[in-house]
View 1 (cartoon, rainbow, N blue to C red):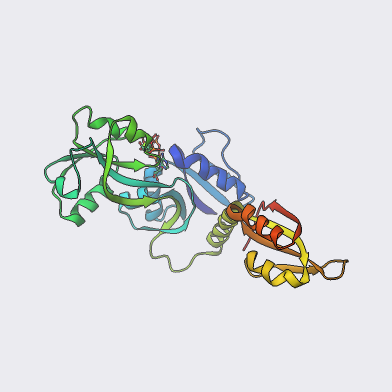
View 2: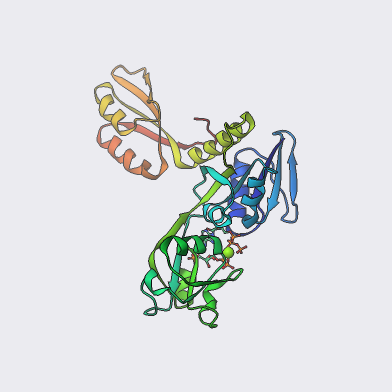
Length: 282
Ligand SMILES: Nc1ncnc2c1ncn2[C@@H]1O[C@H](COP(=O)(O)OP(=O)(O)OP(=O)(O)O)[C@@H](O)[C@H]1O
Ligand SMILES: O=P(O)(O)OC[C@H]1O[C@H](OP(=O)(O)OP(=O)(O)O)[C@H](O)[C@@H]1O
Ligand SMILES: [Mg+2]
């Protein structure tokens, strides 16, 4: 049975379970469940604190896990990313009261509050800066107001939390992060069960990013139309009963679909339809 770690709380938890459910796996019904066996798919899910997941996976006790890239780096353990999942996107940044710090060079001798000492310690060491780091479990934005630190290093998405605390970022982002699937480093080849799991999640990612587009166009416009909708391999083209017309079917990125429909219409294509893709294996 494949053993998989899933975040039990926080920003990663809901979207991770939703993605697994979309991929056809059974998920827990209530947040107090810590382990769930999905006998049909031969998978056992362990609902763990996001910060602990890389530790379990690197120990080899669990085969794979879903966590944040920043949490993986922070833990400093022997595990690696095998699939980015596109949600819980964030940056990790330094921030301070406006006008007090302008760059890394000002950090020497200062105290930095963070929940991610691994990332901060590594970054300071690489930059040759000697500063103190104080660990806080969360709400680190308040640490400056309360005099525990002069600088914080934290996850920033919209920047609302920083603005509310009267802080502003400085320097380059320390790292970018998103939810990822991880496994222990140095595993020679993915076992078939892991490969199947990854294919299912990739299928969800594709189904979320692409739509299916169908349209009819005159045969003499086909090459131009196909240039607009090249599909993944290449579009399916079928003859229509009306001579000189063809029906075309291709996957297109959902984001640009309306623009493509406009362009196809201009080209003379008609009956242009898009439909959602519910599941996919590339
Ligand atoms: N506001 C946010 N937007 C996007 N991603 C976020 C946000 N906050 C945290 N994350 C991501 O979630 C993961 C952090 O997990 P963590 O358990 O600390 O989540 P949390 O949402 O901060 O929950 P908690 O309330 O337990 O602190 C990291 O990968 C981090 O980048
Ligand atoms: O840039 P924003 O969109 O405001 O998002 C970033 C904030 O979200 C997270 O906090 P969370 O709500 O998880 O609280 P925490 O600090 O206790 O982890 C993170 O720690 C930041 O504080
Ligand atoms: Mg948090």
